[in-house]
Image 1 (cartoon, rainbow, N blue to C red):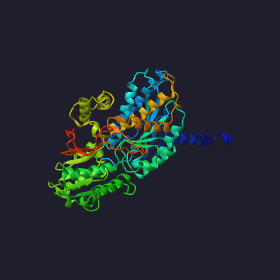
Image 2 (cartoon, rainbow, N blue to C red; image 1 turned 90 degrees about the horizontal axis):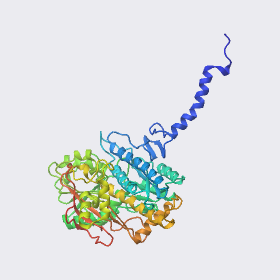
Image 3 (cartoon, one colour; image 1 turned 90 degrees about the vertical axis):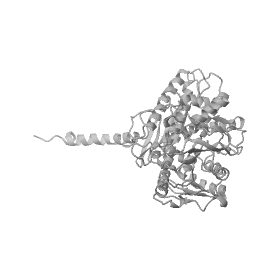
Image 4 (cartoon, rainbow, N blue to C red; image 1 turned 180 degrees about the vertical axis):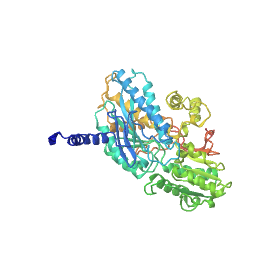
Length: 538
């Protein structure tokens, strides 16, 4: 039989089909974020990209949740709750006749890339910050649709990768999101997680994009120099170092203090602004009469025999990720003769929020560590409500107890570790609350009551300016107390409450820590002087 003409041959037809399909396959792969970041196509606001084995980008929908590693179920669960509330917020906004203010808050964190043990909840700190945003979002959803002044919130969850390595890409994607036409314009970015050079670069880019950045826990000195639109909720490292010096002199009455530091894996002291500025502040605060030599770098496997039975203060000024190794070195080197006074910086809160790591801690070493949010523990909140009828504490406490919001609900008196409010929940909640109060007061000034919501009525820079205006008129007071900024316009709070908490046995997660010392004011106008805790709040 005669061969078919060349244009009718099967091999050519298959080749043509493949050629036509190939660009589409590439386009779909890019649109879906690549093989490591697959999600349902054409979902609401999902923009992710595979970079170095991590998914970088943002999502506001259940079609994509960050981190599918074993042990990170709680992280995925709180994302699911937030995305569910995103749908509720949109529905309530429609039912309000589109009258209620409706804005987007972006959470920018480090949700992937960390080395983890099997079934270890390695992102407990990030989960806590998302829980704080979920609580703030929930309170808006609970307001009746007819409360036309109360803002509704869409939360977008964004990931910048391990140690904010891909912050430049993530911030670029957030900036693109902010430029899009939306019923819920971006009002600000919350998170940023750690004071590092990569974080500083992210702040510079957010500033160029005109986006306010609110950091729940950053405390590296001078982070506000990288953005005119930056605000932090936590006391700067200078205050932490002054508190450590006051505690060493006035309570422990030790003759000297030895300091060890780390800076996290795949990092350096030069890149770690938190550790480097804390060390400088400790040198200044402790002075030559207390500081026993230069701070020492702790490396994995180092011998700590010289610290056995040490009567002074042994201060860990490093990253939480190496604290477990530091404790194991003390156990190996000292056995039943540990140093008398082990004290650690606030980074160790992330270790204390990690139950898997705490299981293996030596039982002979009590620990005192810095807390930036001791006012938002269950016991402290209950005391504020009972003694002072504190409305801000009461509102937060009632929300975290609500069935179906946090998993599990908190502060119900169950007596287990999961009943407690984590360090970062209150700080992230207050970060959102401060922005949303600014949105509410700003909207009240620029529109008549009952008018439909105009997403062009406000912009992110105006929200930041309103936060500062409110700061002068009536500083924000929330779950973690007052947050007051000075008259210079800097983004570091002044006289923010900071505390020292103590546990007698690190591995015991059922017994809550006790506040033993604090500095800073609960409310503006209170005495900010350092003092022993009167009741030992648990």
